[in-house]
Image 1 (tube, one colour):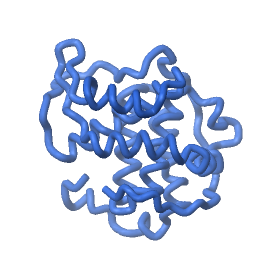
Image 2: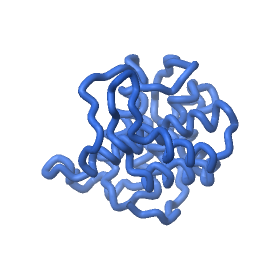
Image 3: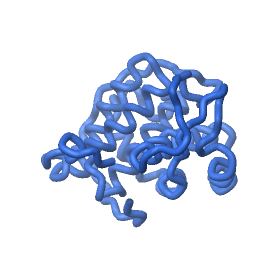
Image 4: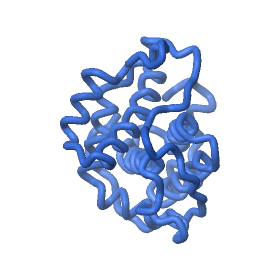
Length: 200
């Protein structure tokens, strides 16, 4: 993954979306079975994205220092066991890049998202965890130019599904699609390599 901060600010189209509150008390995924440790590179990237959303939620909720949260997750929570289920260990480099990138480029990320959101549901009114997922997705679309935007949209819809069972995943899909159309329209028009090969 590219770790440079290249990404051009734009004015995306608006995306409609509806907000339904998730679990405001914690950013733990819904219970799922058959989790395993280890995992493929693709699985480790998926786990890193889910952990990044949790870390951004924690930073927002507790106003915790970014480096403290990154250190805690890398040392203790990537690949943790929850309720007897061992989770795939997330890619620590991707995890840290997303968390630091969203934090350091918050104004730019929020500007792109604000332009993509339905005016009835501004970013500051969204549930903290949903906001964290959208920020992580928008950041990756802007910066990780070596990954097809459709793959990134799909990844963050999956992250939303891990936490929400309402309309939130559809909202994440719609908002990030508008972000991708604004930032990477040419890439979006290219075939999604994920459909023909198991990349990302």
